[in-house]
Image (cartoon, rainbow, N blue to C red; front, top):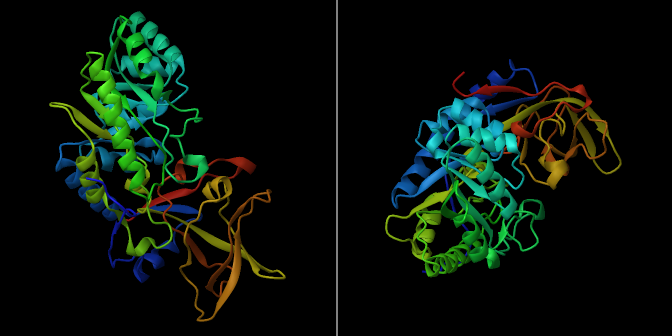
Length: 399
């Protein structure tokens, strides 16, 4: 049935850090990423219960965080992997994901990457153009194999999220125009080393509103009707991921409401007999379990605020500079009761190396530890060595 309103989060009163944990941070070299393994496992447990209720399948989106320890924890729950490069395919298999649960997506797969997928007998390629179908068919033929493919259709749905991560609009570089479904499916059927097994959709990331998911189910139902009219029965439907997390109040909302989303999908998606439904969650699984911690190097007074210059930069956490993304920032070690305003900036020789401006923190001094919350997704994985800086260190709650 139709639904209204925003997606909910499962509330918890548990804070990420206590005094004992913060005291441990003093021995760690900054900047570093800290992963709460207990929270990750609780999130995975909640997700598994939600999808098992309806027999749905999950492929973790490796692009969100490819830390080997994180991947091993996720694969241990029996989930598959959603990869967007040949190296992600190899990393996923190395970390315990069965090849027959690995999906390879992406608008620009190279011949070498396609070969990696075919030689490792992965479950499926999510294909985004007619020409890609031709290339996969040729490479599969050279390898003497048949490649499973799903057609990634661009559903033309606005996910109402950041324009940098909105992938389902008509002018997106991703996917195949849904109006060309019949033409593309017929072409795939004529290729001797391609087996068309499903349809794939992805409308964007950090989605907090339920309405785009209802519209996606509706579009999927329409596309399946067209496929069935062609005399085809496809066993797989992949609805992508995109479920958002709470960057503003992470402590009270640490685990997304997977249950509500799965109930919504079940109520709106028409599923054929023996047909499987797949999802590709990334951010929703790992974002809240990760925090970046940095040390204050200097405090520099300014006209309207104070600059707190920390030892992490956009080389360590690029989302604020790249997307204008928000992360809750906390001073973990301040000894003062009074609050002051700060611009939190990094040491990179670029004016865009700014994490946030005009935020209120307890009085902050040189040596204080600053936490950037909800950094488990698109944090460590996007780190770079610009300015020849070292990559951030990594620690886990059970070290």
